[in-house]
Image (cartoon, rainbow, N blue to C red; front, side):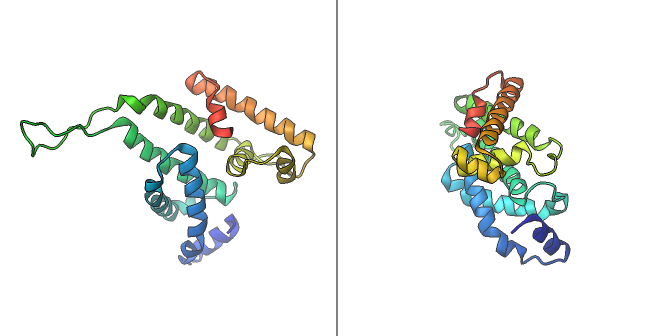
Length: 199
């Protein structure tokens, strides 16, 4: 389903659109979960939360980006919410003196650096997504990057996706990596985060 069809059906009150959208949400949710390292057992929860957010926020989708790009950004945010809950808190064993006492929540130091790394990646992607529309006949960096992450194309396949020459596709790939490195340096002081996204 593309963005135009989605908006038409939602505006007309056709909520059966979600029956048709669920396979798309599951595919995108699984991709976001895997790219951000969210455990498979959380997949159903993430997809359900994505569906809820799409239903509540569909009017904010203006059709300027591809529907899959918008859905992926929602799925990514749901995954990051799950990661934040896991990274920041863990429940220690109940006190031996009071077995009925509720366990206190304490910061989980062991995964905090991993969370910060992933938060950097999230900030980079959010900044790319906020860039203005691409010039006519082109695509925004975020759209190229999402295709790249989801499909791991060869340079030849990327050229087909971009409807351009092989040399131009390689140049575009190089410029996107350069932009990712610069943004990662801005948010966490390292450029390796770019490779976590695009590697």
